[in-house]
Amino acid sequence: MGDAKTDALTVDQFLAARVGLVEGRDLSVKQVIRYYAHVEGGVHLGDPDEDGQEAMSCMAPVLLGNTTGQIEIVGYLGQVVVDALTPLCDSILTSPTIVPAMHRLNSSGFYDHHWTAKHHAKQRPKTLE
Image 1 (cartoon, rainbow, N blue to C red):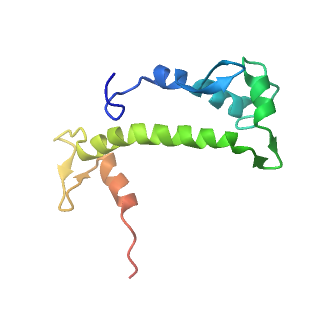
Image 2: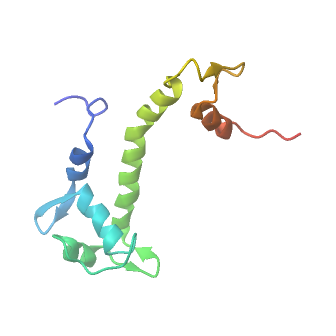
């Protein structure tokens, strides 16, 4: 098994990753996301109708905006996604695909008429005049 920092997962592998146990069976990232999206109101409120959702309903009720610590897992999963995509984003921003006939390097070090220049402009803090 390789180093966790360098091994890349496919989307399907990430969604299938075990994050806990429910009723003695593995609980996957996908099951947790679907539960909070379709039962607890992330997308809509609904009745548990998939494997493990009834048990999760007993473990992690959402009452008037208060939860057990269980819903925090969604935030952790989101952070995993951000951490996984950050190197790709950084790579795209530092080595964008350039079409010489369309994109010219400007004095700020960005390419005119390229989406990355607009991205970097949004990231720069505004100065007071």
